[in-house]
Image (tube, rainbow, N blue to C red; front, side, top):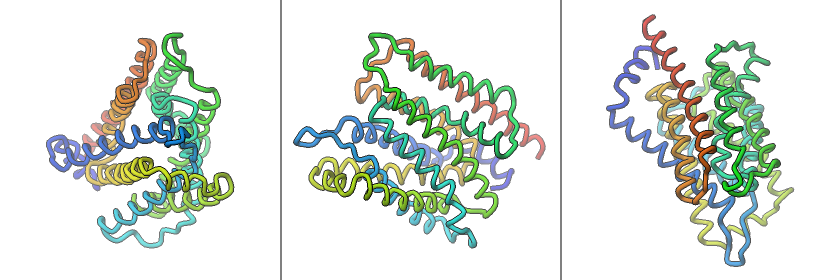
Length: 323
């Protein structure tokens, strides 16, 4: 998309029926994804009263659904750019699955609102690795955003006695591992995209193919077929996982549609506001009790993300004036 088209998209997108469809798809997909992720990993029990604890099995099913979604998406969007090797996605594919594994495993030990807020701080490791490996430079506002979001998460974690069970330190450590994986994945995906001109669906396909291979080995070694047997014997869980996978694949495709048709700036707006509604949906659906202090922490995180978003809009306006 050239700059004139991007400018047109930014000005017209909010009254565009296609925009409403894509944004509605992102919200619906990821709200459903979030509720079902928490339901499967923290709430669901079978008839024997056993909880589902097979993270590797769930993720391998999710990656398989994403692979199918990427193939279908590529077919609908036209021929893929030639000469893009799968090996180019070895590193981002590896760190991508490390981040996913750690994030999903963390849900066994922390609340979903905590996970969402912590994952909102992914700009911290991304900035760190961009500076360390690619020599990137950032403005004072970018550092301010990181500080505000980080302080908001710390405030959220400093729970009052009345606010319920505390999150496990092990779960927090897993989140830090997940954030480190995100920090390495994003810059390397961007680097690979620029180097080979890979389409979004190719990136989705190859990263998930690498993830699938890692997960297959890990599942067979760590969980065996216990997770598949558990799922097979629980019809209600089968339905939940099917909807979960459809929501995951649909959400990724809607994100790529938004990126392609409306630009990165509009996509950033949508994904930023989505985080608040995901936390709100989890609180309402599962009855999480948040103290005033924790809501203040949530507000700081959202405020920091909005400040980051404002910086992107300001940068976009300056670029438009140069046209």
